[in-house]
Each structure stands twice: as C-alpha cells, then as structure tokens.
Length: 386
Ligand SMILES: [Zn+2]
Image 1 (cartoon, protein in one colour):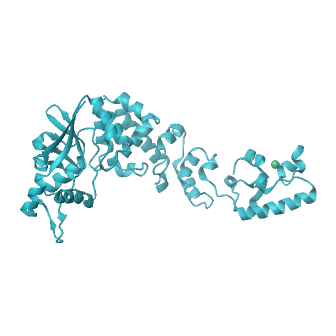
Image 2 (cartoon, rainbow, N blue to C red; image 1 turned 180 degrees about the vertical axis):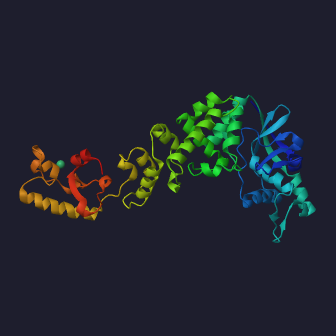
C-alpha cells in the first residue's frame, strides 16, 4: 500500500461542487465530483451539534490545524476515509447551510463574512494522507486509524469491513431516520439508528449472536431478505404477545426471547393482565425481568429480583428463632431440626443462615417478618423458590 502526504489541497478545491444531501444528512461529493465524501464504508454523518460545526470554521479562521484527513485513491476518484465530518461541516458552511457567531456578536453566513476571511477559509491548505492499495489493506488500515471525531462503534466498523451490497441494503433499511416504522421498532430496540445500533440488534437476532460470521457469509448477497423477515417476525411476535408497551421492554434480548418462547401459545389478554399485576407488585425490584418471567410460565422468580428481607428484621427473627430452639434443645434451622442427621441439634450462627419466605412470594407470601424464617444456607439453597 502506498501513502502520500499532501499539503497542497485547499478548502476551495475540496468545496468545489460540494453536494450535501439534506435527506440523508450527509455530504456527498466535493472537488468537482472527484471526491466521494461518503463512500460505502463511511458512517452516516453524525449531526454534530451546531457548536461543533462552528468549531471547525473557527479553527480555519484562526489558522489552527483541523487534523489529518485520510483519502483513498479509487481509480481517478478520491474517497474520504477519515475526515468526513470535518469536510461536511466546511462544505455546509461554504454553501451557506449554517452561520457562525463572529467576535462582534453577529451571526454571519459565508457570503456575509469579510472578504479577507472568506479568502482565508478558501485558501487554507489541508493536510491529507492519500493512500492507494488493495481493498483489504485499506480496510485493515481504516480499522487502525479511526482517530478523529467520534470513534466508530463496533457495528460501524463491521459495516466498513464487510462493505458491499448487503451492507448497503441493510443500512437503507435499518439506519434511515425518516422511516415512520422506526418509532415502533424503538419500543423494543434501544439505540441510535444513525450509529447503526438498530442494525446491530437485527443482526444479533438473526445470527444468534455471531454477527461477524453472518455478515461475512452474506456479504455479497444482493439484499437482506432473511435479516428483514427475521427482524419483522421478532418485533411482530413481541407486539402480539404483549399488547401494551412499557419502557422496560426497550432493549430486552427479544431475539433470544423469541427463539426460546415463540412456539408456545399465549393468551395475550391474560399475559398483559399478569404484566400489569407484576408492575404493581412492590416486591418486584427488576421490572425488566417481568416479560421473560411471564413468557416462561412464571417459574423463575430470580428474573424479578424479588425484594429481600431487611437485615435488621432478619436479625430480630434470628434472635427469636434461636432462643426458642435453644429452649427446645433443637437446631435453630427448622428444617435441620426435623431431620435425623448430625445437624438436628445444631445452633447455626447468624452468618451461617439466610432469610427465607415461609410462603413463597410467588404464592402470595409477603416480604415482612411475619413471613420470614431463617434457614441454614444449605436448606435455603435447596428450597430455592421465593
Ligand atoms: Zn438446615
């Protein structure tokens, strides 16, 4: 791979014929069409806050460096490998897409700046590394540079590494902010579509977690039929089984929940009524676990992190229970006491015991002292169910 450091390319050259897509929120071309600002492997232009965009212009006006830019030679074109955001900010300013606040307090767009300032911006020479090499080399390099701006996240890097028709189609489906259905998806999936986080989740679901293998296998597919069908299936299933939407549903591992439970029959009315009841239960500490708990037939109470007894209360129960046991000459663990083993008369220390719900929480038992007993640790573990 060849790299060449160029310091002769000016802002004016870069901005010649600058094209910006309002719809996609990204800079497309510069240098009279020869510079591809957003090649396939680039992330979507992340809308920098106005401050950040203005910061780039401020640097140009003050003569500060804006950092290295990396271009790749692709035939007679150049593609921006790193620096897309900075170039887009400059292009947007020069084409009057935003204004900056000048030291005198006035907001000015490019054409209303003083002539010398305009000339200074356009005449700024940028520092550009131009590289040329095989696609695989360039992508490996891209993985390692990743220096300026917001670091690429894992999915953005994968999109770079496995770029091709599959990634193009996947991005069109899952990172398009103008899709109305996105609102529905976001009831279940956490993340920012522009940072490819919805796509990452869809890929996790369809691949069962091995996203890299899946992307490598499907890299040259012309479309994303399976990925899309699987994602829609999971979302539709979640929306059918659970009739309502709660904040805690967002970000659950719906792919796994679907795999494990989609073959079961559910009565959506009964399911939602159970969800409502568990939401109202003051002993349920982990509401995120309610959905999986209900799907699994309400067996695994660990999912709900049911509230445990207060340590002060358990100490009082321990003292009372131990005093009574000593009087009878039996173990202070009621389950040891009824056994015939060596521990039948053993008095356990407080630290050797755990608090247990006499009537399990799942059977309506409450978490207060009237329903609390101390058991030795091995009996408590054996009893399990809260
Ligand atoms: Zn015991």
